[in-house]
Image 1 (cartoon, rainbow, N blue to C red):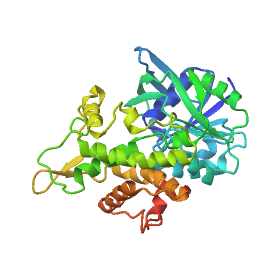
Image 2: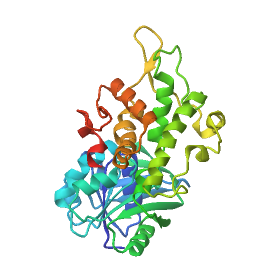
Image 3: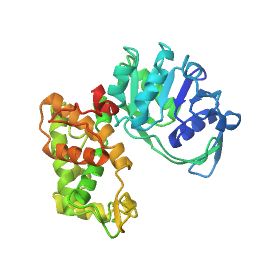
Length: 358
């Protein structure tokens, strides 16, 4: 492993922690590709671990040049949100070594279809089903907090010939057990948030927008929010089945929340301690009260880089999705965008979404 070159793309929370933590081992050549290399002092990051220790990771390269960062990398790992993935893939594609395997920490925003279209043909790909770390920057370019490890990582691959060898390498790099999934579709479609978040926002605001207070996103969850989410999930599950993904890989929303109907789901969601205290994203209205924030990620990410993935597969498979369609049409109007038009994903703004790659 001492000769393995790893390039981390992205200087956000996970980029900081992943680069710093891996570099602290001392047996990996870690490089960081970021827009702000000047803010990293001496190419060194301090990482506070869950047990209170402080790791010191020295990266061999911190740069904004893909020609320098990825040219001879064995592993290129994107630590970027969905809306930034396509741009980064185009940024690095001309400089990738033929030996490089390219992956992403976040995959449910369409990493695999984007990478297949953008990167050189045959580039081996991998992606995490869930992020391996819980991370938070404490001082940009200098210190970050690794607040939690995931004890096991589930990773999907595409075009990786020696899967057993790759799994062993990932276990050595990340220091945890790694399970390889059967299909990259499992990580592309596994995230329920792009259905859950817009369903809740639609339930709250589809017929009126002005509130005299800011509701809690989960604590005030109601039966109509559940009904909307369950209807979306039922449509999604038909797509999952048609794609050949086993149900145990992506359980239904009712199964996930240990419920049997909308009412029991609402009771369950409102009772989960970790979901308490999260407000609905709203803004103060000029005339008083509060209105929804349509620039929030529940719209700007969950629609073009989430719900449109589901809709894209539905169209390919000929599966009708009336509830998902209704939410997309409502949300895109509020966002001032057009993705879905006359039942097809050919609206004027479709090029800004993941759907153009599916």
